[in-house]
Image (cartoon, rainbow, N blue to C red; front, side):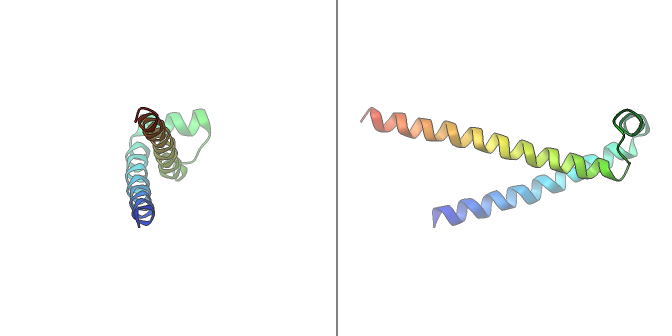
Length: 83
């Protein structure tokens, strides 16, 4: 039951993260200096900017979650050793 709840929370977190990342990308695409810098410097189109920022946000969520899970796992293993 706890695993199902954790999966539901993680999927909800991904949905919120994609939404926030896409919104930030839309704001970046509206700003002329930043979007022109990305379009000319990196070679992306204006339509790709929100999608790229959404994927960057998801990647950040996955990395921080894996680091948190690894730290939690080490803490619980260390706690078992000291009993």
